[in-house]
Amino acid sequence: MDNLTTCERCGSDACYVQEVNEQVKLYFCYGCGFQANTAMTRDSEFLQQQMETLPELYKELMGEDENGTIWMPSVVNLPDKGMVFINGKSTENWRWMAVKAIEIPEEEKSKFPEGNTHKMDMGNAKEFEEKDFMEALSYIGLLP
View 1 (tube, helix red, strand yellow):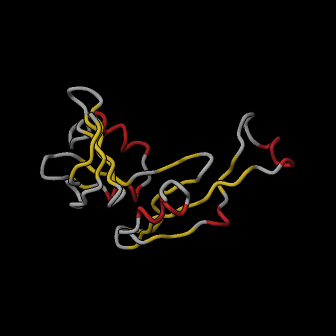
View 2 (cartoon, rainbow, N blue to C red):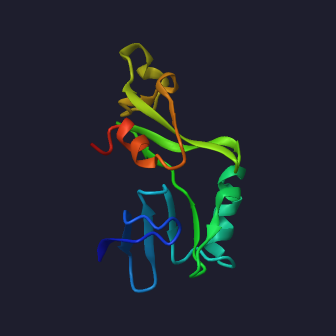
């Protein structure tokens, strides 16, 4: 079952829900840009694994909804379109960063793994306010 629902974090009506199985649901909110799943609760092993690899700002921005589910900022990485991720120094001073992908010039292809056709071009990076996650996705061409 896949559908849209109201986000438990921000209240947006643009929260995509995907039921993986009877025990696990994934949530991805296009309104706030945060994601969660029913396996990610305060004392879960899954959350502990995430905490070992996440950047500090992502950890600091995590929050728990009234159902006990932990929400964290998303990272969108589409090799032929671009990336959207959190950029900032603190929970009071952060933005969404969107970077468009460009084709790898022929003279640079030997520097990349075989089969790669695009690279992220930090020269076209653009910041978006916290509430502008969908605009960041549009910037890289994911949304119209």
